[in-house]
Structure formats: structure tokens, C-alpha cells
Amino acid sequence: MADATIRIPTPLRSFTGGAGEVAVSGNTVRGALDALAAQHEGVLERVLDADGRVRGFVNIYLGDRNISALGGLDAELPDAAVISIVPAVAGGR
Amino acid sequence: MKAKDRRLAELRSVIPEITPDEAQRRREQGAVLIDVREPDEVAQGSPQGALRIVRGFLELKVEDAVPDLDRPLLTLCAGGVRSLLAADNLLKLGYRDVTSVAGGFNAWKRASLPVETPHILNQQERERYGRHLSVPEVGEEGQTRLLESRVLLIGAGGLGSPAAYYLAAAGVGTLGLVDDDVVDRSNLQRQILHTDARVGKLKVDSAREALLALNPSLTIEAHPTRLTADNVESLFDGYDVIVDGTDNFPTRYLINDACVKLRLPNVHASVYRFEGQATVFWPSRPDQPGPCYRCLYPEPPPPEMAPSCAEAGVLGVLPGVMGLLQAVETIKLLLGIGRSLVGRLLQYDALEQRFTELQLERDPECGYCADGVEFPGYQEIVTSCRVPVGG
Image (cartoon, rainbow over all chains, first blue to last red; front, side, top):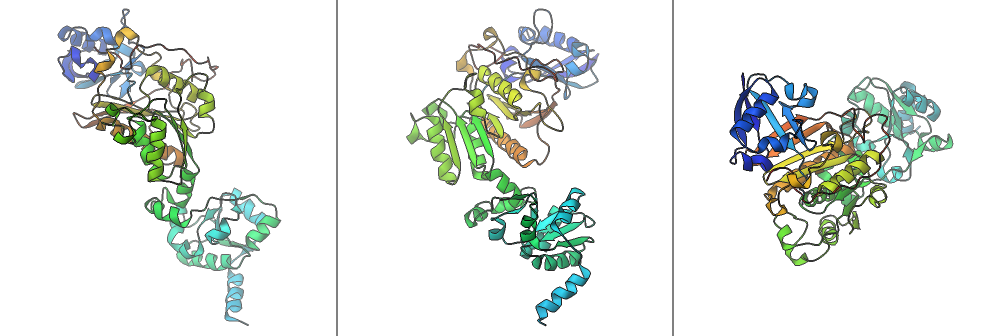
């Protein structure tokens, strides 16, 4: 199991007690997200749909690459991985 | 024999002279044509695409434009005399292959070779944009390009205010503004184009007042309307770059779809509380196509995934930072300089004071911008709120 940091976007921080980063362990991105869900209820449903796929208005990055280019949720985590959840944000006014 | 004529005879014995036709042929093989005439002469017309450096500044400026001393240079003046003197100076400076165009611009026109009438900066413009003119990447040519450019900003609010202000200051000649809203006092915490005295006024009119006060020579095209599928193409028509400073998903998707269809670069930013995102969507960029908004987010969040609108606060300075990044990207695109944010998402976290760069990939299956895909038409998107995810 690798140690990883998940960066939580502001709109989801209400589910993590305000935390912008959550430390987890896992072998894959999916494993890391499961570990996040175990610590903080409600967050995973906002990121994955009922079939466990990444929602169309959210992207997940491993380092600076979208996981869709790295094998999706099954992408393996290097040590000290940084996973970023990046939702679409509309605000501009 | 006058000293001047003796000198010219000497120069003619060492500096080769060619006809305008031959000069044009050599340009096609890589030679650089330098028009060394005075600005008022150039304003009447100049060979198309020529490098224009007035003779008095030739030695000081030529190296920035042509750093390779082995690159063949062709000098041109009105009749072929000053170009000989200029050629001599270039040889002394270290250029090894310099040729003068016999008969100058008069002969050029007689040969029916391509001519253009470039915008020549007037004294006021030289004063105003002096700090740009000193930057080699902008210079006179770049400033002229900015003055001839047309940028359309969607939204004269948090992002649009700083972006429009600096684009106006930079001398982007025509700025279009699309916004149907009026100034509210609660806007003034971040929307710096507007003032307390203009509360209740249309934002595009308030913005025009502020921008023209800063730079009166600009053209401000105010569109006090909401962007819709019916008007988007006519509004975008004739602009070089679109700056997305809107606050809702339906308009962001509409801007994306129209930019994809019309092949325009879409300079994008969004803000939420202390976080911002910026990128440039441009699938039809000539050399290196980038993704579109739909490659990134094929669909907007459904209403149930959006929190109440009242929760959508933002640090007032944040759209300032992000809007200025949009202005920087816009100017780079207009000038064709630097490395744009096409294919990269810049995330800014104001609380951590941290910028993060993420790589964006094109979606080969994208329904709007994938190769070979026919434009599927504009889409009606309904979201109940302006803020995604969360709660």
C-alpha cells in the first residue's frame, strides 16, 4: 500500500470537515478513494456515479495527469502520490 | 563630383543591388526585407510583410528581429539611395550577406509586387505604449497588432473587469462586452470596472465609461444582451479571441460550443471562494490542437449536485488574479508569443498561495471537437444553480 494525499476541492470540503487534503493509503486510485470514503461520508457519491464511474463534471488527476490517460480508477499509485479531484466550476461574477 | 556622389559610387562598387522582383524571389528563400524609410513614408504603403526599422534606429534594433548574422538581408528605401547607406551600416554591424533593392519602393510598386498600408503608431500611441515598445516580443509590430485586434469578453463582472481593464490598458483596439446585467452594490467588492455612483446602470455602459476613461482611443462594443444559441454566432463574428468570464454552466457550454464551431480560442477561467481555474480551450489551434471544455467536462452537474446559490461566495481579489491570467493569455494569443495554457489547467489556491498545473488531454471521442465529428448543434442546458458539486 502506498501513502497518498487526496486534494479536496473547496465545494467538497463540507464533507471533509473543511480539510483541503486527506492522507490515505491504497494501491490504486480506486483504493485511495475508498479509503477517503471510509474516513469521510458523502464525498465519494459526488465524485463517482452509482456505477462507480467518474462523473462527467469531475476529473481526477494523479500527479498532473488525468487518470483517464493512466488506466482510469485502476491506475496504480506511486509512493507519495498526489491525487486531485477537480470539479467543473462555473463562477466568474 | 560631390562628396555624397563619390560615397554612393564607392558603396555601389561593394554592395550588390537587385531588382524588386529578384528581392521578392530571395525573400521566398529566406531573406529578410527591411524597409528603412521614415514612418510617414511607410504609412503610405510598404512591401507586404517587410520588417520596418527606420534608418536612424537600424543598428540598435535589427538584431532583436534578425539575430542570425548569416541570414541574407535586403534593404529598401524610396529610391535606392538610403538603402545603400543602410546596407553599409548592416555590413559594418556584422551581417555578412546584405543587398540593396535598386529603385526602392517606387520600383517595387511599378513591378506590381504586394504592398500593404501598415498602421503606424502616432506620437500619443508611442508615448502610451512606450513600455511595450521596449519589449522585443511586443515592439511596434506587436503593439500595432494589439491595436488592430478584437477581443470579446462574455461577462463584465468579476473576471471580465480585470481582464477588460488590462486589455484596454494594453491597447487591444476593439473590446466587445456581452452582459445584460446592471451594477449592484454587492458587485463592487470585486467588479472593479464599476463604481458606487454607477449602481443601477447597465454593466456594459458602466464598463465602457471606465475603459474609455483609461484609454479613450479604443472602440468598445457594448452588447447589453444575454448570450443565447440564437445570437452567439452573430455576436462572436469578427472577433479574434473570446474571453469567458461568465458565472453559469449553460453559458459556458454555449461559449465552448460556438468557439469550437467558429474555430476561436476560448480563454477560460472560473472562481469559487479561494480557488480558481484557468486554461485556454482551442481545438483548432493550427500547430497543436488542444481540448475543448467538453473534453474535460462532457456534462454539467445536475441540479441536485449543486448547492444553494447563496453559498457561492468568493474572495473579492480572486477573480482579479484569474481575470488577469486571462488577460495575459489573451495578449499572448494575439501576439503569437510564449507558451499558452492550451492543454494545461492552471489551478490557483489563494489560501495556500499555491499554483498547480494539470495536463489536459483531448477526448478522441468528444462529441464536439473530435476529428471528423460534425457539429451537433447547440444544446439546451438546464441547471438550477451556478455552483457545482458539494453541499
